[in-house]
Length: 174
Image (cartoon, rainbow, N blue to C red):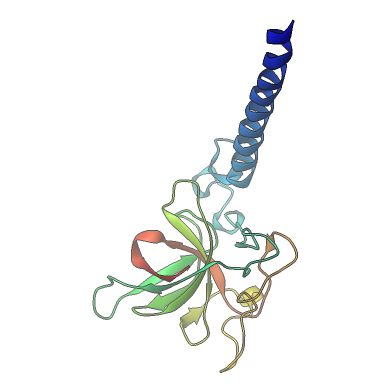
């Protein structure tokens, strides 16, 4: 009887642990639904405009900055720029181009770690294709990601945002 009483908490703990893993996996699958077989793709005839995944801010919780890291674009050939796309896919539309040494607020990343969801710091954007982002703000403007937000949410501030290949970004802080 005593052994059964001692085993019951362990069994319940194991059951909770399994539930947490399932929920985390389910949330990850939901967050990356565009990459799943049923999601829209440019080659499905849906068109590149359908490949949009907003950058999420506030993933570290309400006590930390909306975007928890800062990086610089590095490793580009002279005169080249790197595209910031509307979704973490090569076929997604280019929203803005950034040059070598451009500053980026790193807010999230794709599940495969190949893409970073970023907010482009002022003066870093070369060309904005999509005015819905607001483009680059005036000199001295704040992108609104260096202080906490109350919940996880899509970025809708004044700076350009999107997805960039992680292999062209060097982490500076965070």
